[in-house]
Image (cartoon, rainbow, N blue to C red):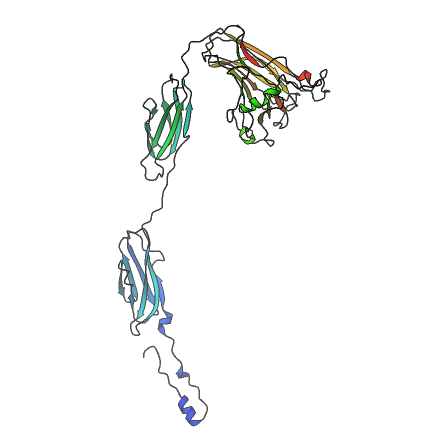
Length: 458
């Protein structure tokens, strides 16, 4: 045999002669050539999914032939000397495919090495494109005539409306854009709803339809403006101990502290006018207070029945409002007045408040309000720490106005002791002073002579 030398043994002679065995270096077995074979590929990459070839060269190898598995019908192999060329047509499957090729010694008919030939699948990288709208709902007032939202995307889109009275513009677009929906004033006493659909056919978008619901509030009766008789009380509140539970039931109590750190009137709580009218007392958080270390802005009804606000700050505002009995607008020439009392129970309450009245659709400025707290005082009627500010503001309307409305906005960061603050104070409360019933003699001076009210003067 060409791969092995004859194995000559002298063991039998040695035994017969009972003599020692003489070593013979010619008796060693030659190394099998198949153990030295090297495989070199033209590329370590797989054959591309769209088809191609791969060259494999074998060195230090006896005569051989390549053997492919029966399942590798997709792969062709040709041989030239020690070089094999594998070729494959396009792989239409998304999965890769491979064949384990065996190299067979022609003389001994045994496998001496093997390797894989791989072809990539057609799986493509999934590309997704963003397709979003800025909001899913819009609230419009009865006299609003348009509302807008934005589309954020790279793809083309179209817009349609479920209500023909609500007309979107543009009706189509590509990429980022603003959609303005136009609609008429709602003159009927029912809410109107329209669903605006923004859609795309782009395959790179998963959710191809986005919905924006517009709700327009019910229209108010088309009553002519009225001028109530002088002395008409449009709204009256009562801040007394016996009213505390009724006031809490009105929605002020229970507003979470975290939500109250957000701007606006979170949850829309208000103190209703329990004595007369349909008035509302509301407190609006003017700025986002979540970044302040104290994070203690809150509203509640105190033990004496009065509204208390903790964490007052610049741009916060108080809103007193009262409609007429029939919800008709107040006629131009009507003189209205708000009458109430404020008291800081600590120096941390803000000092300076701007006063405005709603005239038509505009706010007009009135005399400002300044609150006082005297930290070094004795806290007696003669030398009070807490000081009631009795606030009376009146204005004559120059235009028909939806309702009587007064706004008081904090305008500086000075506290009620006259010190400029760096951030809000958590423990001090602004109180809407009332005629609490169980006042001790020492507290009697903190009471106010009459209930808060909005009335017609002339």
